[in-house]
Amino acid sequence: MNRRSVKVFAPATVANLGSGFDVLGIALETPGDYVLAHRQPQPGLSFSVRSNNSDLPSNVNENVAAHVAQLMLNEFKPSFGIRMTLQKKMPIGSGLGSSAASSVASVVAVNALLVRPLKKKELLRFAVEGERKASGSPHADNVAPSLLGGACLVRSYEPLDVISIPVKNTLVWVVVHPHVVVRTEEARDLLPKAVSLQTAIRQWGNISGLTVGLASGNIELIGKCLEDAIAEPVRGNLIPGFRDVKQAALDAGAFGCSISGSGPSMFAVTSSSTTAKRIGAAMVKTFLRVANVKCDVFVSRTNMEGARIVRMQRG
Image (cartoon, rainbow, N blue to C red; front, side, top):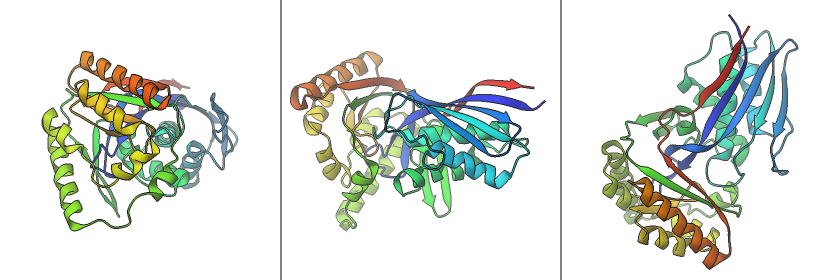
């Protein structure tokens, strides 16, 4: 029996994880975006957006969710069209993988309506095109964990090769989103075009240790290896009160703290939900005191499932 309609959730992500610039990311339980997709007799894509954000593009040629859906329709040429609605729940320019969540929810929804759906991992090549549309770079450190769940390591971009890290789900992530916007393009423009061998060696050691820490559940090792010698020193300047907020997180019991994606969101890691709440409160208080900026707080374990079908109708 054919699938007539589907609703999909795709979660937010924390990319980079400090030292893992463009190659590491984890999925969160909340927040995330939803996509509703229905088969329609007429070919092509009909697209709409539900959002409180007036800056979100709703044009089928500009929105990443519509873009990746159209790519799939162009390639697979189904005998039906799709009517799609993006329910945008995530803030734009947050550093939480907003465009990735929209793209992932879209490709999973379209895939569910196809006669011969692809495996989840086969959808990555479409989802990264949403990132290319959004920022000019088809990076996979957000889309991979949003799609597949858990922690993902991008071993190679040419060809795209993503490895799922067998994470021990004992970590608690605290993510604080200050109400300011950092555009991904702006944050990428600040990055150095070259680094010294000494800096590269330091970064390689940290990312290797971070991968081991995630797989083993060694939170002390994870905390030490969140150190970022490349992006954080320049991107931290885009976040008002960054250094004070980071110190507040560490003082409240975080094992490590850094920038989520390109910012302005910041994340910290701990092993206790009680401690996580204390860390979140300290970070929020410091943002308000130092920079007069209000924040949202998300406390989450690692989302091991990734994007999921919430509802499906057959007929």
